[in-house]
Length: 461
Image 1 (tube, rainbow, N blue to C red):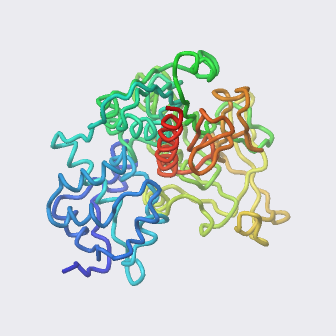
Image 2 (image 1 turned 180 degrees about the horizontal axis):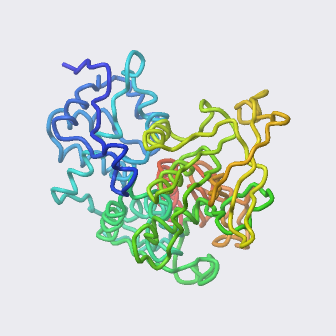
Image 3 (image 1 turned 90 degrees about the vertical axis):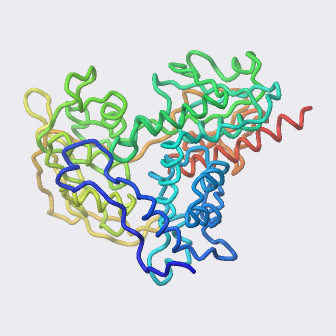
């Protein structure tokens, strides 16, 4: 009989006033008892609406049912057959708008906490030495994957399982893409990313670092080296700015730079080779998950942190959980507020930011109410750093100039839902094709593209 508890089983967390001074993981994970209690809330619906909300097609009721029964090895097998990176997606996937958003239990209470159960199963498997690294015999065909972010790693894993020889070309010195440089340690420990990458290597995936495709090698040159298909999963790494006065001052960061220094270069540690200033008061401009990550990092470096966002809380694009955690940790939200200039001192360092208050008008093309400036509302906020978290766009370095490869108006690779492009042997997915989106959508795109690549290569035989 199902557990009819109305609310999710709570997950233990670090105390907010302790965690906002360290970079250790905030959520501590379920115990076996907690995971089973939550799993038993699943009704095992006949039509399985939760599965339709999962970009990678995890058989959710089945794997959750295995947890409820105590068959954790069976649960991991089902989970990892569908998802190459379960410990990662269990932590950073926006389940509330996907699988959990379709959960029947959410109609009259809270949905089953699918993500927390997924995380528990993946962590249990790692602790007990389980790794789903089985592959088909090598088929003699070679595929190149550009980028080792969630789209690239998923595509590589799926192809390796089918027997392909896969090489992943990563521009940075560390694999993982946004999983390594963008998401903070307190949300996604880098040891977990390394563990998932190591599992792919056990499957035979070759990861080549410091390989900037478009500079070291071009896509046509990859084909000359014997690769029969190329998957572009290079992400969207070019930061966007407001183009307001003062953005060139010392102390103005893109969120990409700020988070890369902290997450990849470990700038928060004493003696780091790539240090970062421990600012006293920081303004983070933006309201998405990246803004929350940057703000929470700055808080951990000792700053008084303000989120500056031009709409109201109802329009914040960040996950509700991230907003909740940021508030708990003492981040101040200056909503309906928009910067118009940044001022510096005589040495060229940030000294203040000038903002205006906003009110919401009619909806714009995104469906959200358009912010309108309130006349005469201008005010200054004294800060010594400004972090622009306004989104990113695709970097065309890896694919720009490739003969016959079409791009969208925004400079992304033009690809359909199966990852197919205007070139029959080139495929693309994730942020490189869609613009900035979520980790799990990138993973889904990598999985779909792997199937398309397999079909393409088999069609030539």
